[in-house]
Image (cartoon, rainbow over all chains, first blue to last red; front, side):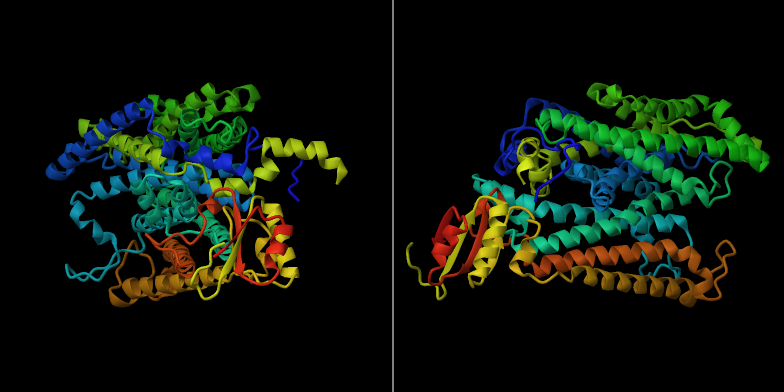
Amino acid sequence: MHYESPVRQPLILGDKSYNQITEDVVRPIENPAPRSWWMVFSIALVMFLWGVGSLAYTVGTGIGVWGLNKTVGWAWDITNFVWWVGIGHAGTLISAVLLLFRQRWRMAINRSAEAMTIFSVIQAGLFPVFHMGRVWMAYWVLPIPNQFGSLWVNFNSPLLWDVFAISTYLSVSVVFWYVGLIPDFAMVRDRAVNPVQKHIYKILSFGWGGKAKAWQRFEEVSLVLAGLATPLVLSVHTIVSMDFATSVIPGWHTTIFPPYFVAGAIFSGFAMVQTLLLIVRKVFKMEDYITVQHIEMMNIIIMVTGSIVGVAYITELFIAWYSGVEYEQYAFLNRATGPYWWAYWSMMTCNVFSPQFMWFKKLRTNLVFTFVISIVVNIGMWFERFVIIVTSLHRDYLPSSWSMFSPSFVDVGIFVGTIGFFFVLFLLYARTFPVIAQAELKTILKTSGEAQKKHHSDHGAHH
Amino acid sequence: MAHTTEPTPVVRALYHDDDVLISAVKEIRAAGYKISEVYTPFPVHGLDKAMGLKETRIAMAAFMYGLLGLTVAVTLTWYMMISDWPQNIGGKPNYNWGMNMPAFVPILFELTVFFAAHLMVWTYLVINGLYPGADAQNPDPRTTDDYFMVELPAADGLVDVLKKSGAVEIAEA
């Protein structure tokens, strides 16, 4: 009944029982935080507060405190927006696409990957909202009847498509995540001894009792949500790329952008999942669940998507030359050899060259090396967005208006602040939420547990 | 066990393994007893069939909600962009909704997904009786960890069938 080919490596190491999985997943919730958690949390909180201060200064004084100028009207804000949205793609990809493809290795990592998605999309959303300047009028992007003039929102505009795409993505990701969390919160509730903790998890678990009919609906809802989230995740970065692709700017006006952006998003998202999970598995002793095999699988995805991104870069260069349009040709020549050459070549090195190390099994199963590469990839993907945005804008059709962009301390403060905010949220999550989807994981224990598989191969001949 | 004032006493049998649970459910039903509920810590595959549960129709509900979302999106874009206040935006033709439609595809898609996902999850919560602060539905807290509980109305000879089916604990309430 619970058979899986012996060729497949076990996904849960050691001799685990259902109860052991419960114990391992609740351990970080029921025990006091290690000192390292408090240290990292304090640093993240300080970064976050610096960001809050920078945002308050921006709102109080105006967008002029950023480093933008007449020629470069979009820079770090949109770079950071696209970077964070891109990181957000891995969570839904792991939980939805890998569910549809019945990839069981997703189960140990999907909870944290989805958490990462939600927290990074929150960071992304801050940038366009604050770039509006008058944030208290942000609700003007909603299609509501208004008394300020008889105009409606413009449904022809990619910027409005973005509003709908990002808000649908964020809210659907949240409910997808929460539907999966309800049974796990119930497990924490049923074990809790401390009355305050018991009460909090009672509220969070919505009264879940694991009735047979509820589980039947649960599985159907998860499957349908995965089916809805799969095209959704692909649509989000497609629409983000249309912010650029629909404008007549050399370097932006290309049809390759949607697939190229989606591949880049998956690439950077998986890198961020690696960064976070390598720490989580170590700090919370989850090595038996988030195994080296999981890390290796993700490294393979990083290698494949990194190579797709590399092909996209080369295609862009080829098409610029082949188009015969001198403005297009200049935009790419300027990227590679102009004043921002260092950003271009950082991007090329980090995104195209560095993932190629993952062809070697020794390197892709090396945890320290993986950690370093995961950071390098995210630096590279930040440079990619910076290169696309700033180098395309800074030398436009009129050489007299050419300029350079340099970020002000406020730009830096807001960016650092979002990194702090992201880690504040993720660290709070890691201490209070079940970081592994334990109910789902228990369903594969008998087929993919190490001891259970061994038992099968020893006794399998008798049946 | 102690007798309570409840009008219909129920028997609760605990099992410690999902395979034993499935075969027990089949045995109990074959012996002619009616199972009122089964509580499990994780989705046990094949349990709904063993219990004779009907298939859920929630996916069909989600499809309907998606159609509703699509209708809302069509209405919204038609009313705002074509009917109420048409404008020349980038020279895009907007004499009727169909001509302007390609620019609305992202909105049509996003609202379809938005309605299907959210309304389906609301439906799921309502029909399962799940809401913030609700009392736990499972009578025994161990059934969210590693125990499986079968609940059924008390009847003659039931306890023997349950014992034979592999129950590790039987309680009447």
